[in-house]
Amino acid sequence: MKILVCISHVPDTTSKINFTENNTKFDPSGVQFIIGPYDDYALARAIELKESTGSTVTVINVGTAETEPTIRKALAIGADDAIRVNADPVDSFFVAAQIAEHAKAGGYDLILMGRESIDYNSGAVHGIVGEMLGIPSVSPVMKLEVDGTKVKMAREIEGGKEYVEANLPLVAGCQEPIAEWKIPNMRGIMSAKTKPLKVVDAKAVDSGIKLQKFELPPPKGAVKMISADNVGELVTLLKNEAKVL
Amino acid sequence: MAILVFVEAAEGKIKGNSLEAVAYAKAMGGPVTAIALGAVDKAELEALGKYGAEKVLHAKDAKLDQGIIQAYASVLSKALEDEKADILVLANSSLGTPVAARVAAKTGAALASNVVDLPNTASGFVVKKSIYTGKAFAHIELKSQKKVIAIRKNAAELKEVGGTATVTDYNPSLSDADFVTKITSTEKATGEILLPEANIVVSGGRGMKGPEHWGLIEDLAKTLHAATGCSKPVSDMGWRPHHEHVGQTGVKVSPQLYVAVGISGAIQHLAGVNSSKCIVVINKDADAPFFKAADYGIVGDAFDVLPKLNEALKGAK
Image (tube, rainbow over the protein chains, first blue to last red):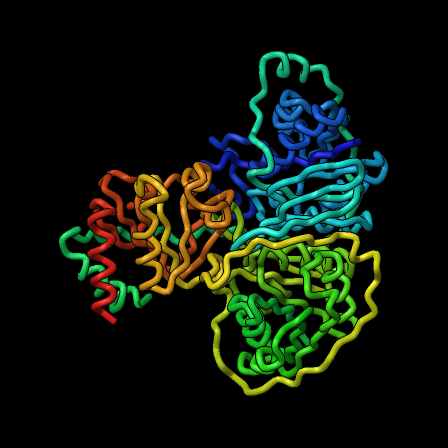
């Protein structure tokens, strides 16, 4: 089986978010970048499938040269080779179009990625890729087993889950607890340095979307502390001041 | 220019977030046509008129009783064409968001999800969406004629504006190719208030010391008509099911009131709750970082504070 794992290069979950240039650019200073946490689950499941079924795993990232350490990390975790589409990942449609292009050319059976990237949170790339390739897309997937060409999945829904079956080829947007995150070992880190990482140009795509500006939420006012012996005061405040009861 | 709104039902009732999607479309200027797929009670569909739908299309083919992402995307794309509608509005959900993506790709529409407010049409068509898991917003212009907008809870005010909507059967031809995905079974809590729909959420963390103490959280939730949530460690340890995990990699909520009990307030948890209107934190550690993000705080032992708070709330009714 040929597996393609799509990874995003995103600020660490503990990052403080800031913008520059009149709120039109993300400020990367002091920010550590990681493989998107959901994508990391997808990658971990792909590596498990590689080990249990003898599959190959290719990672693809749409990003500029700064994303290469993140891609190398995915190779250190166990992916065989990587593709970097050299462009800013401006929106879901643009990213999905790049992935679909390579997925088609590479003849992948299973395309895995996170349910959403944690920067834009659109949760759309898996669906758009599925539609562009004319194959099923399932998300958010919390369990995925492959048996021959049949794929059995659990998809999280509000208040529970549903069990879904489909045949390869297919796209899945993944989340916990599909697999445990993997930490690269020393041998993985060494071998990642020489694994193939192909850099390709992006194809031109118009997604009909233009970013105007970013905005930070207004700062939170000071917390009002209430004594544990006077919970009645909290009830009064919630009713009359916050007006949420 | 008609606006099409996809409404979802759960346990026979239209979901609250879908009612908000109808209200959102109405506030945009309508006229609003809603569309429901699969079995839904007709009275529920007629009642969509209250929030501004003039007409409701009901695609009640039994094959649509299950939420198959591909099939739903095909029906909605066809309905956009048949209704000569340029805009599809729906609520972000485990089904709505993936369906929105496929509809956008199928119809060539510009897509925006996690939208938190009505569009600004002063110059162009600009929507505000939540990004960086609630840590920031982006204003994006949707330049295509066709648009798909997936809204977050509280993006529009739920106002009663009308009466009864006209419900008509809608029977698009369904292609077998759209049903290659099969849903074999579903496990779902019934009768519970669902986390993404709730106006009030009560969440517990490791400070609750074990799943056997969750009765305290549930009692308070019952008094408040709230949904119950939990922190990531609690779901990781299996104290509570995964669909209750609130945070960066779990459910993101935006209720009127979020009550956090025994949760320290790691930045990953805050990312899932920071668009709540009001946050109450109860923690015995006065230095818990969550207090900095709270509106009201109580330093105290959950096992002491929760029963007292529950009684006080009951007494206030």
